[in-house]
Length: 468
Ligand code: GDG
Image (cartoon, rainbow, N blue to C red; front, side, top):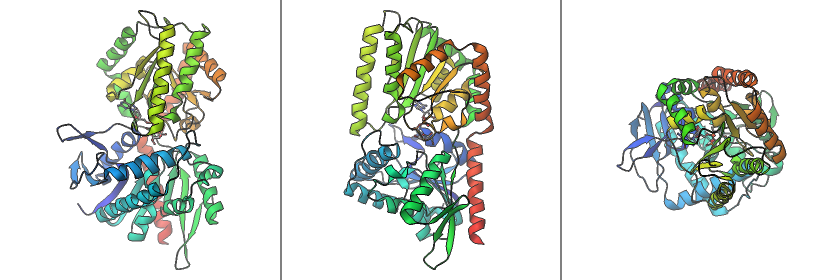
């Protein structure tokens, strides 16, 4: 298929390889978000297959034309683990971990972004829409524009965009801004991210930035407009509601509670094992509540799903060790024969099991130190068809701009976090219902289809404006 009207370009294809060489849909934020969009659009998806040197021809999967991009082991180490996950990821998450700036990683990033752009233009129909996803591919919009001025280009940034004082550390800040500005619409999770981006463009490139767009000079002396705006991503709310209604999933939720020894309150954390998610802060607060006897192990259990992530990057290996040491210490001190303080699961589960966990959890703890959106917070709300349960939500997530029914916390403030947990533990059902209804209304009114519709509408408008 060399004529797709919609081409998604993302670091990863939406599939993982089975042991027997087949493919299955992969878990994770981006795939969860775009799966329903692609199902309707019947477009093409350009991405890496997840293993080194996979030289594969394009193939069809679930009504989508998949175009694999091959990466060598060296490129995975330098472009993906290096520049994407050891430079951009920590820098854009407010340097929670120290970013490393290495020239050979940057060179690999340029080379791989060029390969993705070449693959995208090869499959795009005349006048197509090319929608680039996320921080691994920030140069692709401009590279596509140079090759194919006929296409309309979108870019969506799933993670935060930092303040200029931090962004300006990046030795290649100018190239990255120019890469992103190749898009007609540059989408961010929060208004604050779009503002940080516009300020960086103004400070670095001196382009005129207004509410209606950024004016970019063309080589021929004319200008074009790029829109930088917030489009908060969401979830396929209906599918969570549907799963939460299934009797077998409700039964599984009751089983989970029984297997934990029927504690009065189940607290839950669900995250990729990542230093941005504030897992240690959460455990510290919970451990102190046990130490101070404000919570007892018979009454409260914290279930922490920490799905394996970026397991070859040093900061992630260290984080895992720290978390597992903390879990061991807390459980060693407070466990009884029948009850555990923290049920720690370094595993990935099927989505049905996640929904059963959401249904079982009286309190959902989202304590990220920085997070573009955080879909887990929205999934929890969507799944709570009984209108019960309490969401404790970090103000440093994109979700906190929308989910005003949550208890808002600053995860760095451990005393404040402890008080918020106790407020959640003690919250009367009436108040739970009032807050949960508010949360659920938001995820019902604004699901992932509304997100993609809004984004693609903005792209269509940009196409018209720039054609005039
Ligand atoms: C990035 C941004 C932004 C997790 N463990 C399992 C599992 N998950 C699913 C969750 C959720 C997704 O993965 C995680 O999404 P998040 O939004 O929480 O976080 P990131 O992976 O960091 O995503 C983030 C997102 O992109 C979208 O723009 O919100 O800020 O960092 O859907 O449920 N799913 C299954 N088993 C697991 O063990 N099935």
